[in-house]
Amino acid sequence: METGVKIVEGSCKGCVNCIKSCPTEALRVIEGKVKILPELCIDCGECLRTCREKALALDEDDWDLLKSHGPVTLMADPTFCAQFSHYWSPGLIREALASLEMQDLFDQASIAFDLAALATARQLQEASRESLPLISIYCPAVVRLIQVRFPELLHRLVKTETPLETGTLLWRRETGSKGGVILVTPCSAKVMLVRGPVGRTKSMMDHVVSVKRLARDLLAAGPKVEGKSGAPIGSRWLAWALRGGESRHVRAFSERKLTTMAVSGLRNTIDLLQDLELGRLKGVDFVECRVCDLGCIGGIGNAESRFLSELRLSRQPIEWKVTAGEHAALQELYETGIWKLEQPIQPRPRPSLADTLDVAMKKLKEMQALYAELPHIDCGACGRPSCRALAEDVVRGEGELTDCVFKLRERISLLGEEITLLSGKLPHAFHERKHVK
Image 1 (tube, rainbow, N blue to C red):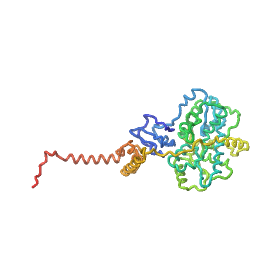
Image 2 (spheres, rainbow, N blue to C red):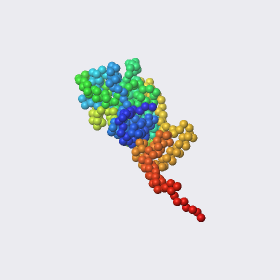
Image 3 (spheres, rainbow, N blue to C red):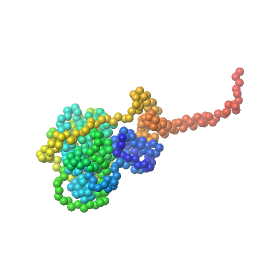
Image 4 (cartoon, helix red, strand yellow):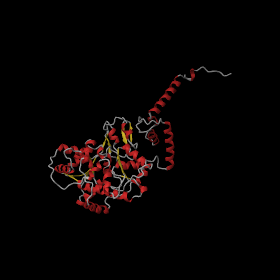
């Protein structure tokens, strides 16, 4: 199993800052080296933000190698269009990319995002009041967080494929091309759209590079653009880069008034999902969550400040009114089912302690007993995010109780007392024997 984060060998200093930031306890620092547990990792990127030594990085493909093989085709996340001050519109960015022999799929993306909004609006209309609110699946980290920590909410996820996949499929059907498509991603979570997609067996995209890598390469090349008139590119899809943009798009296609909520940031997302789990969101139709601050523009793989990106996108002229012609074309695509997920999204339970239930139960009791002995302060000095995680690792044979500094000091103290006691004793031959009368 892969993750969207890679370990940079030799860079880890054992500071354990990263393990405290992980919401699913997927990190360990053992013998001065960081380790990722892929079955628990949700690719949220929080560890990348906290690692000062750059021991963790986005696991993207080699951009220089990809472009050396000739013209490239790019499926760019909407955040890419907010990275430049002088290429302020998708049309200008298209012209700049074309001058470097790079083909964008902006047109297909615009249609795919419209189609995703329409499909989501239809699901909201058809859903019963008891099954609402439904949850967006656009942020892969949110989907994985629900799989790992909130599996009882899986039935609330909308059954709509990510428009990045749908847009790529539209292009392949239009052109008949089987050539490689590169996803331009703002975060580690969307790296996994290519490497390990959820809800489908294989991605329609072939490679992945960060928004930062491509944006900096484009800026370094400095292509001159003239703003040549061309077919207009839809702008509604750009709003998905912002918190609340997807919700606004879905409302544009809804036949009834919707009550939507949008949150960004990992902690806010967890709090909202907990409220939803407890049934506190009655009357809400749709929930949009993004683990990055302010939305996808806050992704760790972006080049530009999220605040400047928000300013640029907020100034983009967006026509929310959908024309009759657009509705007709989208309805035709909707009826093909191209927007549907291939597979249901399943929970990702924690790895079992053993292969058989009896052994697993015994190990669980052992783990609980070990946990009771630990200080319960979750300091992280053992290289685990919590005392419970250390107890679990000990039971799995991947650690020792003395990895806890407090238990180690306790053991040393006991050994010191025993050594002091023993040092005061003399060999038996030196003792004066006491005669019993």
